[in-house]
Image (cartoon, rainbow, N blue to C red; front, side, top):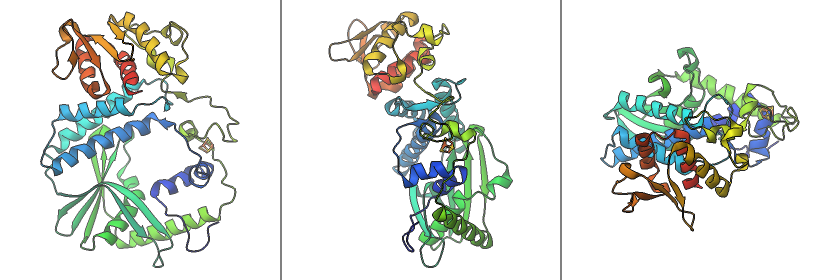
Length: 377
Ligand code: SF4
């Protein structure tokens, strides 16, 4: 229990975590047990948000990137941030599936909103804070993806969603997250007479909108205060077993699972790294018995060499570990450090170019992912 006046600052995601599973809440927010793992859905969402943040920051500077550039940036960021603690729970889908899903989200969004000239951008990834009570004991904070002034006294809170499920309007109308942000906007921008909440369900190319009356906001304050009181009074933090457990980073220490982790696998599994056009099985993928679950740079190098044979690609690692690829007729790109005989040294900076080359060479996307993973490591 916290002493009066010293309640932590709550966020919508903190509250939702408790509602889904009090034990997960305890591990994350009270015990603060660090976890490097992240789900591929979270990874994908971060990359899409980054790409849109970059798009709008460019617009603020008077520059509008085209869709190909936006997608290149997204792919480059994907490779740059990729790490071997990204987990795929839905094993029927590959890393490539998720990467392309993010691309489709961005394509849908770009096509629906270009030339991006509606309203004035007030803030991007903007932190808002508010209190639920007059004494300021119950504090809330959050980050608005994009805050827009749509006219005199009219504000819009925009939120990007990469979810594969499109909610009904009725769900949106009682959604807590953006309504709590509205309290922050009304406090921080006193000229806000009207606030509209806008969700972009990018996978569907759909925009959903909602407004809250002052009575609805008062009810929201009361129910949220009651929920915070319940959290503060909890001493047991009982685990709630559900399908969400498969995405939980604490499954390994959770008593419900007794240390078992039967469903989730690291994204860099043999299967996902193996790929290639030959539909290899996990056992066939790793010709040298490399355990890619704890993949090291050395192991990845071995796997790339093995896969290059299947792909018909010529690969060379120099003594400093730099990766060279013979591009042949595909080669010259001004920014590739090409040699006369068609060899180019690949680097993290040119990952998006690499993906284009891969498409032209018709090497498999999974092979490209191996290369990208090596460059990012
Ligand atoms: S594994 Fe499931 S029950 Fe255990 S903490 Fe995570 S979400 Fe809760």
